[in-house]
Length: 381
Image 1 (tube, rainbow, N blue to C red):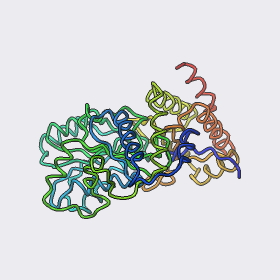
Image 2 (cartoon, rainbow, N blue to C red):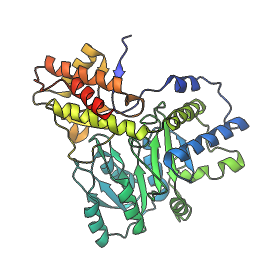
Image 3 (cartoon, rainbow, N blue to C red):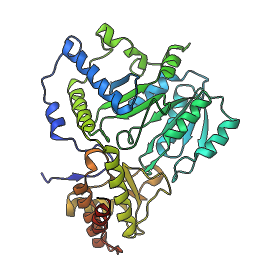
Image 4 (cartoon, rainbow, N blue to C red):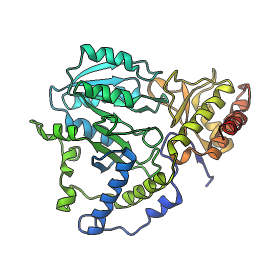
């Protein structure tokens, strides 16, 4: 089987340490004391990642589980909910809110820019009677990061709880749950954390926990009710069987992250060098502001479909790049530079292959992307 370099925006590569951790003997998670302590120690590592004193739950399911569980656990029928919408995933929250009976108000923002905090501030001055707001840290399809450090404190100043999708930002972008007054912060194992897909991470503030406990209408479901984990450690009881091997892998991946002193800087440096390489070669980024450190979204040249580029990259160079969906379908391609994918040699190979692929497809490049990348990295050394 031909080896493929996968440079999509997740799932990302995992280290050999993480792969080996998955091969550890499987315990009985409901009966063996060792596993209760393993789950607890992994939670404590997550608290360091989240920069929080609050509990971070590890749920058995891909990242979407967390988004829906947060809405299911916090929203009661008739609750007023603000959905901050500047992208596909921000818009997607609207369906979850309606599913659980929320009364939705949408704050619309351009899909190619980071949320304008001043405009949101002006909006909230007149409209702030909301129980909670949903928002996205990194809009992965568009390659945009929103300023959580300003938005979440602004929401909190109006007494509004926040549900933050940080799945594609966490670890690759700065994030401080407690300092930024974030209430429910959602992550996943397969993006910047570079563990296998299958786990959702949920940080829950005291305010959010209080709102969940103060509900008058029961949560419409069991698996999506975040409060079913209450007292798990004291009672040595999980509400359902835990994914032992995945949690072993997650713990090791978190240790790898915490051993690196400047992981956020690594992401930002490589992202900036990638953007300068593609724009210097004559391509254009989709985003106009708020450029993400974890993914770059690049407009396809006229006459080039995504399938044409993907096939050339894969067949001629053994490299898989990302496309997009919804309104961005066949308009852009994406390079994932997150977690273990955010390595200089992998990005060099990808950019060189892109230069050769576009040339083969008849697109004239101003300069070789990989050479521009090397120059930029050299200037930052």
